Image (cartoon, rainbow, N blue to C red; front, side, top):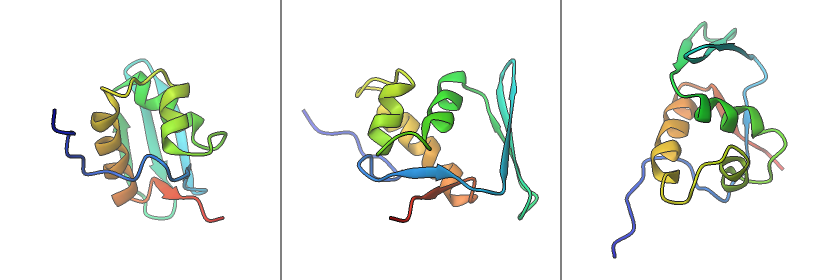
Length: 96
């Protein structure tokens, strides 16, 4: 079996919501607003919202995904979504 190719951050690194980002939960998922860049992102998946909300309390992206109930099989899809949020500076890699 070939491992899936992902285009997102390493699952073993720690990530945080950018300090200038506000999260507003909505019935469809959430709105993320970055006050520094004035960018708005829509999370159309409540599981992704749970993963984003658990970043601060997680030692790695893998732990945040597990906390949000994301299986190893589904991780590549969410990893790609987190990569997109990282490109828009909504989430940032945690500095030790």
